[in-house]
Picture 1 (spheres, rainbow, N blue to C red):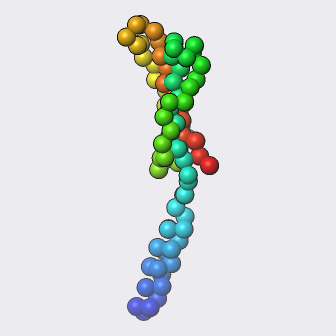
Picture 2 (spheres, rainbow, N blue to C red; picture 1 turned 30 degrees about the vertical axis):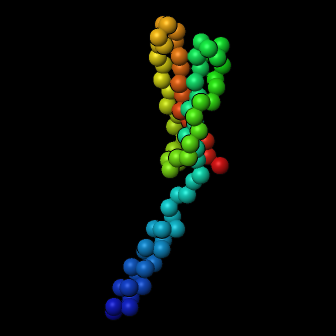
Picture 3 (cartoon, rainbow, N blue to C red; picture 1 turned 45 degrees about the vertical axis):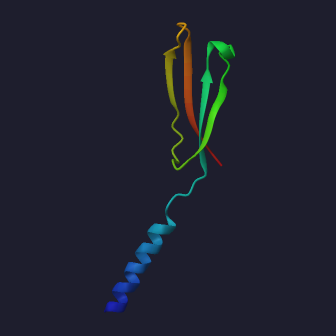
Amino acid sequence: MKTNLLFTLLTIVITLYSCEKKCLCESVVYESTFETSYEWVESIREPSNECSQDPVSSTFLDSNGNISYVRTVLECH
């Protein structure tokens, strides 16, 4: 009985571990500003543990009142 329980528990653990999603992603920040003639320019790239590729965007005014855009995207290999 103990052997069956141990075998079942071990099988569950191995199954759950093998189903974990592995991804190699980087969080990349792009900026579009007056200084870049509103072309998207990569400003930061760093490793990320996230696997969801949902981009995040924001807009703000710089000290001169120019609109600047920032977009963060996950790029996965």
